[in-house]
Amino acid sequence: MNTKLLAITFAVTVFSAKVNFAQSVTNQKKWWKEQVVYQIYPRSFKDSDGDGIGDLKGITSKLDYLKTLGVDIVWLSPHFDSPNADNGYDIRDYEKVMAEFGTMKDFDEMLAGLKKRNIKLIIDLVVNHSSDEHKWFQESKSSKRSPYRDYYIWRQGKDGHAPSNWPSFFGGPAWEKAGPDGEYYLHYFAKKQPDLNWENPKLREEVYSIMKFWLDKGVDGFRMDVIPLISKNQQFPDFDSITIQHPEFMYAFGPRLHEYLKEMNSKVLSKYDAMTVGEVFGGTPEKTNLLTDERRKEINLAFSFDVARVGRNNWYQNKWTLPEWKKLFTIQSDLDQYHWPTVFLSNHDNPRTVSKFGDDSPAFRVQSAKLLAMLILMQRGTAFLYQGDEIGMTNYPFTSFSQFDDVEIKGNYKQVLASGVTAEKYLAELNKSGRDHARTPMQWSADKQAGFTTGDKSWLAVNPNYKEINVQNELENPNSVFNFYKQLLAIRKGNNDLIYGSYKDLAPDHNAVFAFTRTGKNNEYLVVLNMSGQKVAFDLDAKFKNYKLVIANQSLEKTTLSSTTLELEPWEALMYKSH
Ligand code: ISL
Image 1 (cartoon, rainbow, N blue to C red):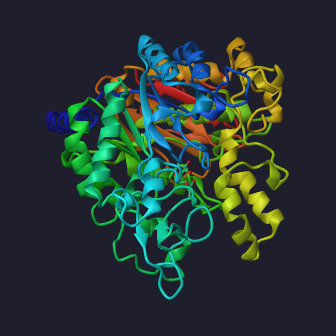
Image 2: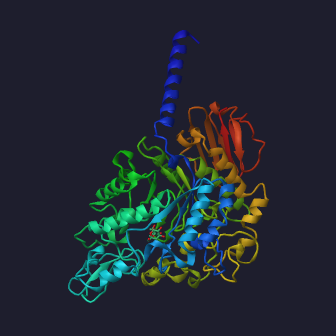
């Protein structure tokens, strides 16, 4: 190679290394960018007193399980006092533990147990609304002259009707007439979940005081429930017939949202090393990026649902293609150094990961659950795992509406059927998209009630497949989904190439294979996932020749990439590294 060409080649190599170097290190290092979160839905995790409802002592009894798995942070869904109109997302007292879940002493013991195991805790901040049984609302409803009246949003009706045609997400209108003055109060969700009035500085100070109460107890941050909804358009205009189909896009990002979050950050969050992740329901990538831009000092991270809810139109689960799904990962990983992505495929509001994105049939459940584990944990961004996904738990086979618990399903039932959708069609769709799939009790063993409770009944039926799919079996089987998650978590832990490395989709248009690289300062990792039930021959660039296998969910003979054509088995997942 002549000198000039050599010099050019050298310059290009240095530049591309610099680009990779730049991409892998420009993000400021933070613990919440590096660590993996495990979401616990306390009602369904572990019951310690036989009443069929999960509780805090139950969680404490399973902390060694979480430590063995290797997760770093627990996100605890609401544990506060609640009448459970929406399973705790309707809070009656923000500084008291729900009686079914135990006492503040139990909370303190759970928190101490987590800290002893070097596991952080973030809790759910639900401050778009409270329970209608909260003392603030009871006072507010009692009279227009109550000092708590403006803790909520009351308006006179118009011509004998509600103040506007706004709908609730849980069926019916978003306005409810109540109290001696005949005014209406606003509730985006259930009637028992009245929206708080963030225009009122006194209410905001109450929220900040609640946040400090839990941060001073040693909690490490918050997941913020529907946080983009807290600022309302004070004109409360009627929606047209199209907008009304997806009101979240009108309810979210109201005029004072950023002002409120900057105030919250300045008055509370900036005084702690706290992690915040906003549930950005009703957002767009551009708007969401304004929330999480580090320079704006609002919140750290956001759940936008593009990836997890791909194909969703309310409770309809429509088809989607792998290329359109892969593009969403590229968009979120292309964020600049002031933003940091989240990676999650399910939570307590969405179907089970392996049932929606994998294949939960007996032939491919284990392999596809492992493949999805590699996808989540090797993507760029803070990974959020949902309880039970680590053992490949599946959707529940609902056969009748009486089996559902979800207030969203029950609240929408009448109007869905009134719209002409048959009960069979609605049930069939809910068997793909319903929230209860993720809320069936954690399957600990093949004992009765899957070892979730010593009682004879659980608050929601245990999935009938618990004798096959349970933690005990998983721990005993070295090739289990659990042990694959555990291996991946160990590979990822502290690996700055996998955490901060740049991301590149190698085959964005491929309809079956999801292949990407993660390039850091020291190593490049190649991940190849066959997200189909068919064998696929996949061609790789020659540069990957001689990359070494790190982990695979099936055949291990593909140890070195000697050929640049990979013959992939159905649902085969492989990860290689450059050296
Ligand atoms: O997408 C949805 C609306 O149809 C729901 O799954 C969900 O209500 C929405 O994502 C907001 O979720 C959060 O707020 C709700 C609560 O029911 C959810 O459990 C919570 O995650 C109201 O607090």
